[in-house]
Image 1 (cartoon, rainbow, N blue to C red):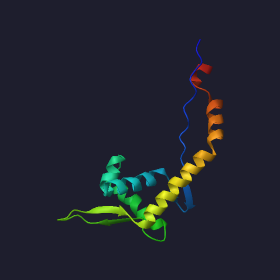
Image 2: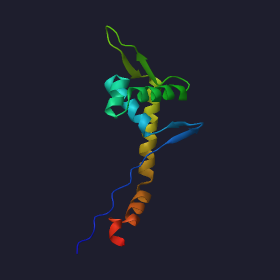
Image 3: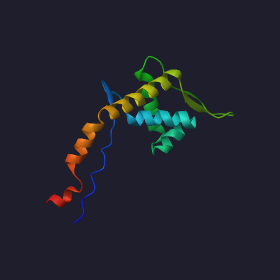
Image 4: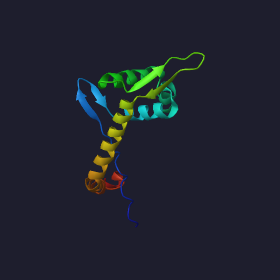
Length: 126
């Protein structure tokens, strides 16, 4: 009889709730990274399997959350449209990712304990 593999590590996700439905979490951070990388709200949304409308709703929410817009966009046309993170957007994204990394590092031992206490295949314990 072999020793069962340990359970996989849980996903660590930080969600900042500012109240009144205002939340900054992994989805908005991923969208911001996609906009930064692709230069397009639509392309970033597509990469995430998100509709164009939903991506725009999240950008509007992001822009309303802080004292300055996080994403700027220009309409299409002869030169094409585009989007980019503002300096504030880059700062917010960097701070969020830093918070995420710090929290994950600080909780490494507790997460390992929870993983080990959970065990592997729970279906074998019937």
